Length: 224
Ligand SMILES: Nc1ncnc2c1ncn2[C@@H]1O[C@H](COP(=O)(O)OP(=O)(O)OP(=O)(O)O)[C@@H](O)[C@H]1O
Ligand SMILES: [Mg+2]
Image 1 (cartoon, rainbow, N blue to C red):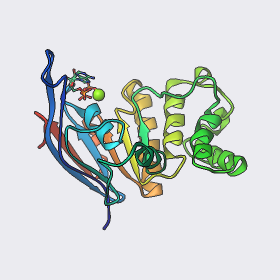
Image 2: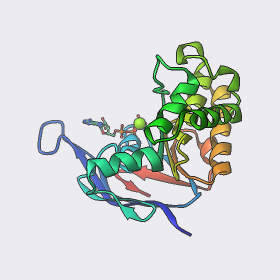
Image 3: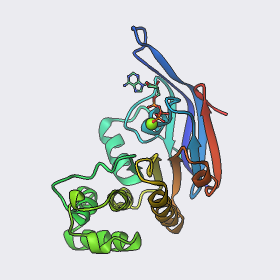
Image 4: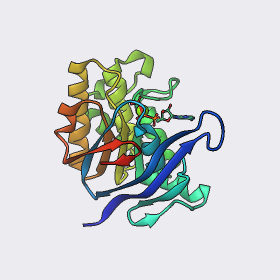
């Protein structure tokens, strides 16, 4: 089976050699097979967000490599990394980060347009994704006109817009109440399973983590 993500020997220290130095990651090795759904758990401050940002090519490690689909992108140019980020990775944050001046549908259309998809097909795909997570009726609403759970579901659709092979989610239901969190989380996992993408999902919720294929725990800068 092919590999969606491989992190090897990832180390990261913030403020290296300066006051306030924080050694966060001390050699993280982790790989995800294509289609594998993995929970990432760790105490607050242990480095989950830091690790997801490395995997998502949003930040670079001090040492170590990040490979997507078998291709090492650690030292690649900004142009190559940006394109990989757009096409091959979907990222979901704890808070939706939707663009406030655009509707739900437009937020899902924009990354497709950036990747060269024509307006008609981009809108059709956006509506299909929104429908799939139960918010088709909110397609023309702006984020401020949607509930927290609806906003987060729209953010999932945006992350999946370009059919990436890998989804990275940083406590994607962390700001929702437990009931809503469960419904929204189920929608995310169903969508991930249906598309066959791999996913690495940080969560504090062990019940939600138990629904995934595997749980990895980050402790003292390493996967244990
Ligand atoms: N830009 C930064 N500069 C300095 N220190 C940072 C920076 N970003 C994060 N840190 C520190 O690195 C450590 C790991 O932070 P990170 O956000 O990755 O943790 P986390 O596991 O995601 O925590 P949480 O569960 O609270 O979201 C923390 O001690 C944090 O204070
Ligand atoms: Mg975090």
